[in-house]
Length: 181
Length: 181
Image 1: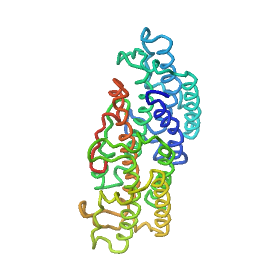
Image 2: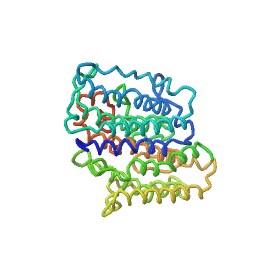
Image 3: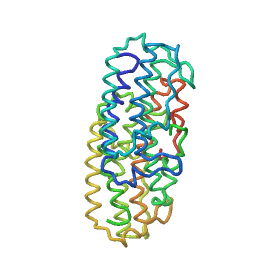
């Protein structure tokens, strides 16, 4: 594989198992609480990750390969996860994410990307011209931004409990850095 | 168990498996690189976590129970991980962390802490008076601050690769928030 794709896939294929090992069976004080009004719980983040597998990464990669930058990507609805999370337990969502990610990675392999494909350009509705290579690196980095967010959401739940130690804990100083957490 | 100890333990007993699922077998571009001069690689973080199991959490809990705040904790050497990491592969360090954490949690259970014990006070060399309850919550939050750091170190390795998407990825905006990452 070219252009670091193997490195990206190595991470992306591990994310579901890592989240499963961290989260399955955890008390709800860690997974169902948010950082306050209009912020996400850990459970919401997992629903958002499933949503991305269904509607963001592979559909955009295919659009680049099929249409280049002639057509902009459909905007990704950052509230679109709601329907994915409704009525599901965290454990069901972890299972769904694992299945969705395995399916996405199988589809990615089936694209048989060539060296030239990685430089093909698509059009992001807000960011403008982007390459397929950038899309694939962003897919992997998106896992990391949500792992970063999950650790921050969880740490928030024990903010009062750690007392004076909070100033030594970097995660307690993190207020998030963007809409994507 | 009292004072949320069960919730803390539920997280702490999952951390080694979560890190293992995320990191074992990953290409070294994710695990051996740092964020620049005088910053840590993922591998360094795991060595630091082992060091904490050996010399920080349980020894301080025992000191509180034995001596209260009569004696300050021994300062924890934030560079003390070096000897733990020397000559070890990441996989060896992941195994060591899992063993060290299991041992620590067995020791914690063997303390048979009572409701009163959680309010016992110790003396931190920099922070002053702290309770055993705060120490135990900090132990759990310390896992999260390093998960937060690990996701940031890894994201740093693909900072250039994501192109314009970096502004949508919160983790790419995170510069760390303290010496503890």
